[in-house]
Image (tube, rainbow, N blue to C red; front, side, top):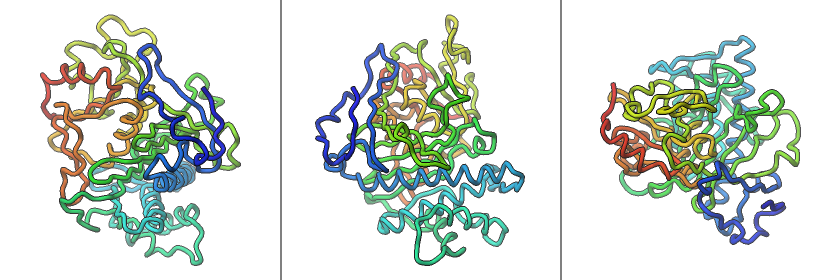
Length: 407
């Protein structure tokens, strides 16, 4: 079924009352809609946070353009790379995206705080400050006065660790990962990285937007297809995708289509496609005692499962599951590494609204309020399981025998 949507507000919400997941024999079911400008594929009267999601889509798309621009400069030899204390490579794009998102959302929703990955301590009093200011100025909304260095640094710190304390009471706040998969950002044009933004209200993720500039919609025609995708979700309204607008030209009618996406319908473990963190090996997971992993997606042998090569970070793997490209993403907790809220919040709602499920290894929901003061860390028992839903209990049963953290 296809509907040309000229104005979201003119379409009855009943027309979007679609089943939450695809039938078992269909890998992915999609419904295309054409929307104007940044309109969402569902009406405002059926989505409480419609305005917030429109703003999230707009700023995530601009943040993706910022990433692409900075990466071009990076690859041209400027070498704008900085190392954080935990040895994760950080670029001007990281700080630029956080500043851009903070500025835009702070102007539109000044009462909603931001929980984000970076703070400006690493770039203060370095020559990177000017690079960040330039990158943000090119993408920020026009104002009567130019952006100052202090304004950009303050915007970065608005999401930093020491900016505020939320406390134990239910709260509304944005969660941002400026670039999830920074190593992928640095690797090349085919590596995946994600700008991820979510809104949490009372401990529940109510909307999310993820932009992936290198995502290939058509894997069979990578050479000729233009990469880039944005994925959005709103509680009760499903998960939708559309291609990122071209960087140097006007958006075409073809690019204006939103497509509703669903998780795949596989219910047998040996048929499923798996993702794991690139820092962990299949042999570290309890499922490895029953199945060997192969990357031969077309011809897995008996006793084998397909392990998809994905890079980098967690959010692209959530996108894989929500879009039906992967069936399961498993992460095993490490005793010496904390699990950050921004690596999971937006992915959780996208998978849930696509018909999937996200829990820890004991089947409990991920508690975003477990870090009662700062909302920066989550504590899933033994790790995280992201699935198409149908496989979830089977995966839980198979992981229960090895549900301990690894070093």
